[in-house]
Image (cartoon, rainbow, N blue to C red):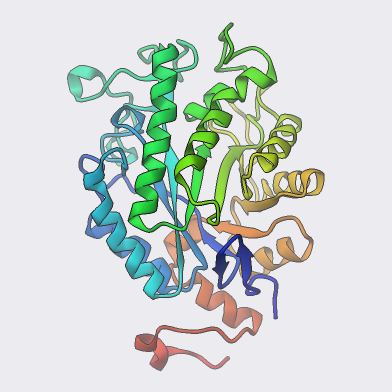
Length: 356
C-alpha cells in the first residue's frame, strides 16, 4: 500500500486516504449562504475520492468576509445548507471539514473576477478591522484597530461558528490564521504594532489566536480534530518567519491542536515569494520534525508521485491539493490508478473504471 492511500486516524476520524481538498474560495454566496454551486463543487470532490474536504473560508461574522460573495457561518440560518453538503459528501465516503475565518484588513473587496478591488461603504463595503490601523494597500481606507470589545467579539464569533459547525455535522474544523487575514495580522509584527497585551512580544502577538482556540474548543467535541492553517513565513524582512512558526506549533500542540496546515505569505503585497513545485513543503517538514505535530503540505502539488514522495520522506501527514483538484476533481481516483492502488469507485461510475 502506498503512503498516499494508507488511511489515517486523527482522534475519532478515519480518512480513507491522505488527499485533502484545500480550502478554496468560490465567491458564490449571497449573504453567506451555501447553494447548489457549493453542493456540486464540494460533492464532486467527494465523488472523486478525496479523503478530507475542507470548505472555503467561512466567515465568522459579516465584517469578516473577504468579499460580499463569501461563504459564512455567522447565523443559524446558514446551517441547513451546509448540513446537506456534509451529508452528501459523507455518503460518498469523504470526511467534511470547515475552515473558519475572519479577513480583518483584507475584507471588503470585490471578488477576483469583479476586479478584486477595495469596496467602499458607499459601494456596499464595510469598515474593516485589524490589530493596527494599517491598510493592506496604502490607498485603501485604514482599518479600525480592534478595541477590547472588538477583540471579545472576534473570539465569541469564532466560538459560535464552531458550535454551528458541529450542528451542521462537520468532523474537522480548521482555524484560518494564514494568508494575511485577521489572526495572521495579529501574529506578524509587520501588521501588528499594538502596545497593549496583544502586541509587541511573541507571547502577546499570539494571544488572540490562543484565545480563539480556547473558545472554539469549548464548543468543539474533544474527539474531533482541530487544525490550524498558518503562513509559515511572510516572505518579508521583519515579518513572521519559520522560527516563529515552529515555536507557535509547539504551543498549539500543547493546546490540543491536531494538525498544522503549512502555507505561507499573504500578509503584505510586496512579498517576494519563490513560487515553485512544492515550495512550501519544507515548512511542513521542519515543523513536524521540530515539534512532532501532524502537518499538512500544500502548494503546487500536482501529481501522485509528488504527493507520495512527500509522505514517504516523512515531510507531512496530509497532502492539501488546491488548483489540481479544481482542474480535475477525480484526481484521487486517477492517482490511485497511477500508483497501482485498488480503490473504491462510486457504483454509478464503475463502468468507466480502467483496470490499468
